[in-house]
Amino acid sequence: MKRRNRRMSVLGAVVVLGVVWLLLSFLNRSLVQPATSNSSSPSGTSSSSATIPNCQLSELPKQVAEAVKTVRTNGPYLRPRNDGGIFGNNEHLLPSRPNGYYKEYTVSDPTSSFPGPRRLVTGGQVGGGSEPTEWFYTADHYVHFCRVQGT
Image 1 (cartoon, rainbow, N blue to C red):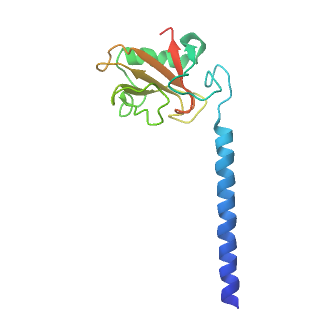
Image 2 (image 1 turned 30 degrees about the horizontal axis):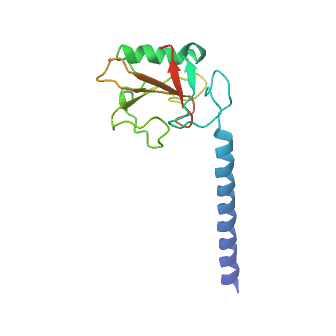
Image 3 (image 1 turned 135 degrees about the horizontal axis):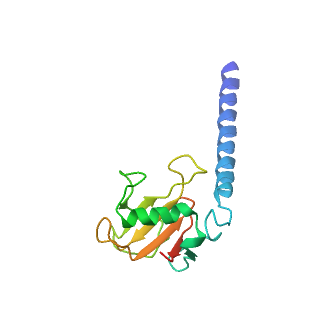
């Protein structure tokens, strides 16, 4: 009898932990959506390759302009091992391009622990320091994008 009670207790604990995990996963998805302001994602809507909103560089956090300058001068980068690496576009949120077309760069965020969620993604660079043909910004680590204008 004691053995059966112990099994039921363990099973109950596993069920409770599973429910808590599901609840936290659901809440985390709701809480991760960025607020719409100039310091976060420029659009509260989800990105897709057909409907990426435009954003003006002058309206984004000043650190984005600093990252643009860093890309143009080929460094120094905040994360030298990662910045300039290939962005795979695995979620297909940006327009489809051949593998290796997109590069990603860290954008500093004084309100987050390093490296934070902000990224600049460029497209069409031939080599390090060359001028990209496309610029995209995400304030929430690739959940939402905007096409940067005025670079």
